[in-house]
Length: 448
Image 1 (tube, helix red, strand yellow):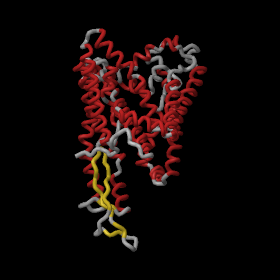
Image 2 (tube, helix red, strand yellow):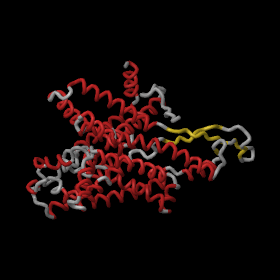
Image 3 (tube, rainbow, N blue to C red):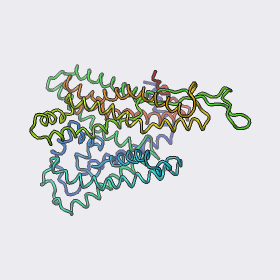
Image 4 (cartoon, rainbow, N blue to C red):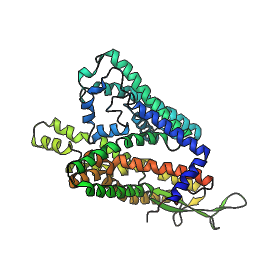
């Protein structure tokens, strides 16, 4: 404990780091304040139906969690930062097939700036589509017509679309400013703060259910907290675990060439166990509405009724079986398109590096691809297990659904990943000033 207090004192002593932390907290506070400001023309008292529809998970629950409750509040930040995330994913995927984007990716800093500008314009385009869709869907999501003070005509829709688009762009600007002048990844921090905002309320509901209703008492609350800490530890292992591929670099000769017969420096290529992050969960969650919708199209038939009953409950058995299988499939898919083993092999060959025992070129690419496939399989199973864990604890322990969502899935992985990234950045400042970091070692874990 004394060492931790000493570390906090060291953080305070570094003026630049202290200012960055305060600026980050200030920008996050602005974002949280905006999430509570309801759109003009909507009666906030009559939004209870919308809040109920976003409880208990599902796609709407994820959107509401990522926006920090702004979606359910019909706030000026109701779209959150998700249009920017969607635009980033689209640009990343398009970069695989469009030569112009591939060329920009190879141009260094200037190319990155151009790609960022394309992402911003695409974000605005997505917002222009999503904003009116959100406004027109409020009625179907439980908001009565009487909640629209000025009605739902053009005089309400047009200003509200402008406000929602502006709110998303402002949130994007806040995230970029946090990245540039604060600490941590700004966009990820905005999402994380939104997720954490619902944590106290969810725990309070679970506490009331266990203690005041005599449903297990404090003993079960303590057991749940211990399990939660263990799950957080497992998520940390999933985020940090890597397979290190040894790489030998030949020494340069006097003529400027490479001599592989001479001893060179040995480095490693870190291949992450979970290279796809939380994207497989987001992809899988986004299409999990399809089976229930297909069931509704089949009407009152036995198959249709079974599909609607089985795939409408996100804590049900069949829902989670399909959800887990989709996560495994999307993990392989997203890893294959985001980990360019061919490019890694070419870069190694150009820089005079080689994997011991493997010929440079196509054989190296095949070797890296094989290793990536071998470690992606257990990583995908681990990711799927964490994603369905909320349903398991609800069915076995009778846990409240809101609190169970913090036992795995997108929310917990994002929180753990952002926390690790932010701590590593703080450690970098401390180590540069010859202080001990928040973690004992900055080395990544190796997957045996």
